[in-house]
Length: 123
Length: 112
Image 1: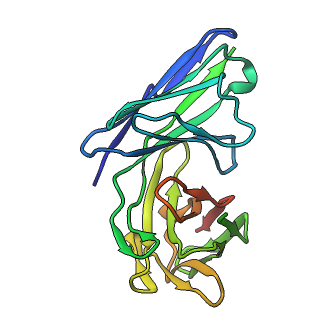
Image 2 (image 1 turned 180 degrees about the horizontal axis):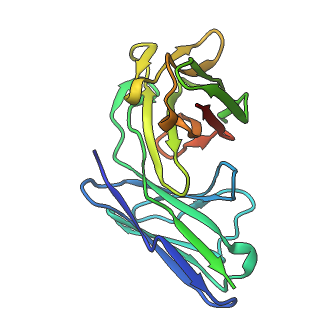
């Protein structure tokens, strides 16, 4: 199956510093990548969707200037948490989706492949 | 806009008994539906997906789900639970390639 590599798997940083998380699709081209945030024992909350070569689309309530997303190539997207604070501590997960294959009008059969996640702790 | 509701936050079964994890969706268009499993501190693994082909979908590890348009449901089942099935399960709906919405998740506990 397709592999998505997310790095680092965990990171501890000081308050006020920035942290970059990388998400790479290793054996396919990802036209779309998603970034999620997951609090303990909760579901994945979509933060933003990025398409290669264009600006990311952020969900309501997600600060664009705080969570910088770059999708510079078809195999790499990065999430930078700027000026991190303890409340930014969380589990961040990326996923990548290959180009859609239409099987019926309005329906696509492409699943998303997930990275292993990054646990960010801001102290 | 589409959304998905997982009706149970926690399901507990005994090993060897059937598993039923419920999921209802809302979508203006024909959706693609997925079930993912997440083990503690791990990433997500796809169990199965529905993409407008057969309504009964078979996945990995003995799981299957049936798409019922009339009930807007996509419940996940397994005939016999195993201890290794204990995990968090997410139902996901997608209409376009730029959108994947997660349900709140159902934590499955399997008792010996």
